Image (cartoon, rainbow, N blue to C red; front, side):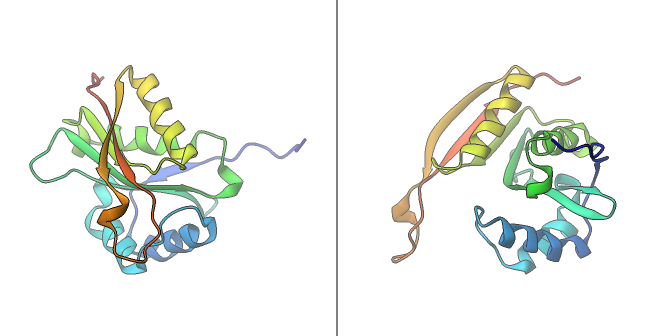
Length: 169
């Protein structure tokens, strides 16, 4: 058992410079789809109000990329959530999503969506935990099927998880 004090974790909107460290975290994790570093840079810069990073002592511990889809101002679509091994099991992923919901840009959000493959137990547990905390229903429906991916791309289905509606404040 470690006698190390618990980490003090800060949550903030990302900046352009966070894109590369996020890409590195995803690459090292090995269990998330690795997107182009450019995609993470754009999300951090152009969608910073709906994304969040978790850090401690200048070290990136986690991130959540999300956006409010056009025509759905009541929905936050969570694209990707990643937590460094050193911070897993401490509620960092759920706290990042809660942080997003507290922002003024998400004041009209009553639904959260995301696609989660059947084998991604951590993300499924995250959505279930958040639904329970928000006292919201969690529904799963077919969305992106294996045949939607290019030939030769061995990718699981990506069902849509939708939780809500939930009350605010």
